[in-house]
Length: 303
Length: 303
Image 1: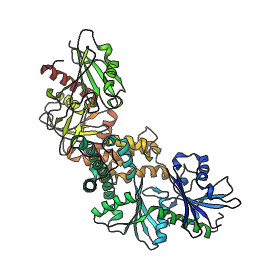
Image 2: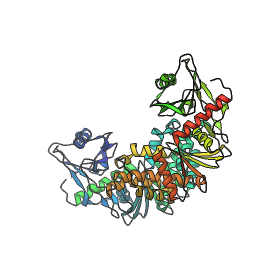
Image 3: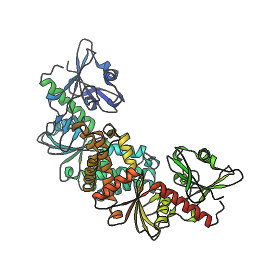
Image 4: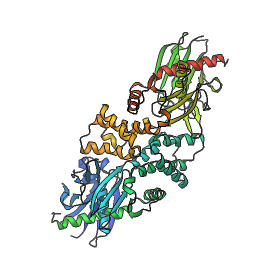
């Protein structure tokens, strides 16, 4: 009965881990059955397709999930906790109705902020995972991704946070805009990235003009696809650093994200004179879900 | 033999006018056979589908065209003129090979700029049309669109110009990003637009964060779809005005674009204390093509 299942269920991906008695993942499975691809009846079958082999007849194995699965368009809506608040607290978990008697499904709520309005779903669990490792952390966590989050942490709570659409803008501009004719490579050019970060930091208001110059540069000056891609990324990350300065300036800053994206943010921040630390995103997610599972058990929530 | 055909051939649309002896359009036709939808063999049939009824057996009716039809991916590439230069000069026209003996096809070249790199195709013809009306104009023309151009004019020449991808970003963000769930209306909210312009003017570096707040606002604060749409537009136009300030500050400024888009720019500029004039885009295009046709005739180019 010590076995449980950790689930990270985002808009475009689903990942699940079978957790052993020692708190470590013993099996892992994933699919592209993200929340955005499913209607309400699709969630249970999509999950069972991954976790069925881990279930035991006559036992109820609890699953604890974070991410967009708890959104209004998800399986069951989990109302947001309100910042300032701890990233995860036992009170707000929502249970999804499942037909299969061999498991139960519990969703970690996201966090909202008023004035200015902002929301997160999934990142709060990574924050909880990080705070398990560094409970006295006082500083800022940056979680780069489709919607990058900057989260101010103090006294074990999320004090405030700020979301930037940088990752989604990079995806749209590189794949769906006129720049797709210039960004035709997965390559990279570090010097071009650095120069673009500096350009955007000094003139963020020129963003829409500097973006078009990528196209003009490949038409007129032989700008290479790898350089075009790095420049696009540098312009967007640089603009984000200009805008998020109140979050990172003079702070203890830790990046939690996939390795290559975190490396870009780390490099751009070093151009601003700040040496950020890094933590592994998957590890933080699993650690946060373990914390949530422990909280649920402690609170006597029937699993 | 005084009849000729004016053609405005962009990436997504094709428009043609039968021009009478008095220099006015007597017939008009259009289709969505834009340059982006055609391979090289597709251009002549696409044009004939519109102009066939205007052609006369045994005569060669000249057609004069501007726009992306002259791009590398167009019918025939028309090499860019280099700014500083007059918007249209007889030297650079390129003739496309046509099979039908009843017409000839001449393309107005675009204009390029080095340092910083920039390009235009089609706008130079509108600029020429405007200068026909106001030959002594000394100031700036703003041509709002998918890729908005700011063009500094002096002594009948394009001195310099600057392209902003504002229109394309609006289209991508409102239709393909997470904001599509918030911008579900064609409605408008003038006060929301004004507020967003002011926000972007004062903090352009916050663009990617302010964009996400549109989504958060509709999730948490009941931001209405029409208000979301106006806010998205205001944030992008405001950022552009912050970035194009060296172009418009203290200048005689004329907007050339479609009516509703020009009205938005005009309103945003008035928040900056600048009263811009407006000129009709179609009228400027036709006037510029007439100028090009006259130049061709005068230069003795065999039509």
